[in-house]
Image 1 (cartoon, helix red, strand yellow):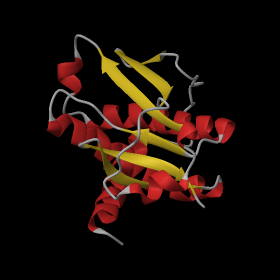
Image 2: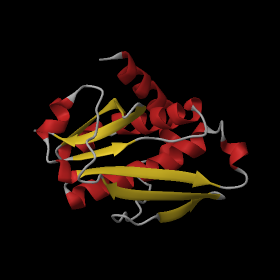
Image 3: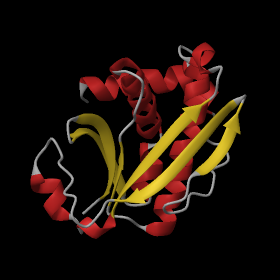
Length: 173
């Protein structure tokens, strides 16, 4: 097991109660539509977008993954968290874990319904620390629910996409 997988396992175990993955209700994601929901007083938006025909996804691990799948079935899941009181949640891993748990569960439901080849998640933040925090929590939730992901025929891993850290969920082939 890699160091990152151990880190994700530890983080998931620490946040499992906040995530409450089994009880969280997924939101219905739709292609090219900004879907919004509230957690506490935070407004959260999630959007699924297809990568354009001309955009080649540059994975850090080279073109092996890219050439393995149909580029017309590559999607990105983007999300944002907005509120004037966001500052008080910056260090609140539990709130962020709860939000990302809903996003992960919604992503997995969307994958089951739409059967994409590859879905990328590239967290954005005001700075690298905020982006890495989101990525670590998202990855730990996927790690904690890896058997569910495998049961629908997918696996996940972290990578760099066009210079940014992120992760991908891909079909097992």
